[in-house]
Structure formats: structure tokens, C-alpha cells
Image 1: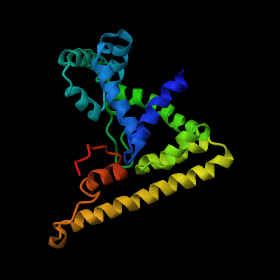
Image 2: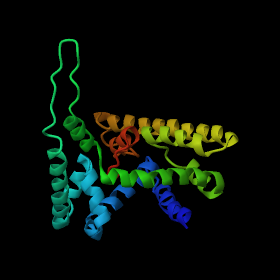
Image 3: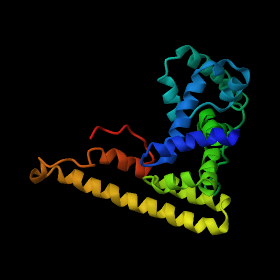
Image 4: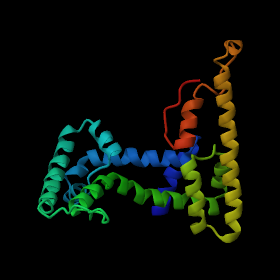
Length: 241
């Protein structure tokens, strides 16, 4: 059952024909996690204990702050701040030592605590747990499902981060005889689609030349947005061509 549940979002992402289906998978997980957080789950004790402990990173806090459930966010923040205060009070009285000319100052425990708090995020952790299953499913489907292999081979490639991540994950999942053909195909998808996007950007810039003013845009009108996805994994809504 779990495998079937994981195959649905993987197939859906590849059906979108985006510049990186792995980015599409991640974005769907992120949107679902924000909805989950702002739904009835914020009232559950076990969820609140984790959000109090981990808090949220800047991007996800910004996303949460834009949701309509202001009461839910206020309750989440209230108990999180109360825990932050309790933990900080346990550390503030510990001595902070100054470094010397030849000795680096020892890092205060409260500084280490503050830094760790800025790096933890309940939503990031939730996404990462599920995302690992999705990557594994991509490779399992590639192994066992001929229809998916065709879909994979016809996709528009991947962003730089997920291109590398797929190959890294393939080393763990695929058999020796499958690995090299997968790497060769994935690398070809990556480089061929970089060339496609480069050609689109060429034509996009040509359109600013008066000689091509009345020429059709072809597939270049949203070339910048798609190139941003390919280079940095940032999904944006496509502009109408």
C-alpha cells in the first residue's frame, strides 16, 4: 500500500513536464506540509511538542505567515516562544569567557543553542522524510515499470541539485548493470535540456533586437523562469506564450 501511495505523486510530477519533476515533487510536499500545519493538526499535542522544539526556518515561517489561519499560527508561536524562553533562561547565567591573544574564545553554550535553533525546522524535517521515499520510488519505478522508464526518458531533465541527487541515490538503489545506463541517460537528459534552454534564451535576447521585433516568440517567452528552475531549482508559474 505504501509503495502505491508513493508512486502516485511521483507519476504526477513526471506528467507535469516541468523543467524538473523532482522540484515539482518537492514543491507538492512543501505545499501539503504547510496545509497540514495550518489544518487541525496544530491542535494535536504530539505535533505541538515537535513544533515547539524545532520551530521553523525563515522560508517556511514566511509561508505560514501568509496563511489565513491566524489563530492557529498564534497558538503555535505562543507555545514555541514559551519553550524558547524556558531553554534560554537555563543558559543565560552560564559564564561567557573571553579569548586571549593566542587562544580562541570558547563558544558559549547559549550561542551554540541559538545557532542550532535557527537551523531546525519542523516542516523541513517532515518534507525530508517523505522526499527520501519519493526519490527511492523514482528509482524503483525506473527498475520495474517500463511505462515509467519511457516517461523518465522523455522528461525535460532536472535542475542542477536534483540531477546530482538522483545519481547519488542511484548508487544506493540500482544494481551494477543498471547504474551506468541510468547515469548515461540522466546526464543526457540534463545536458540536452540545458542546450534547449540555452537556445530559448538566445531567441529571447534576439527578440530585443529590432530586426526580430515582429518575429514569433517561439518557445522563449518564459525562458528566464524555466532557466531559473533549471539552474537553482526555483519553480515559478509559467508565463503565457
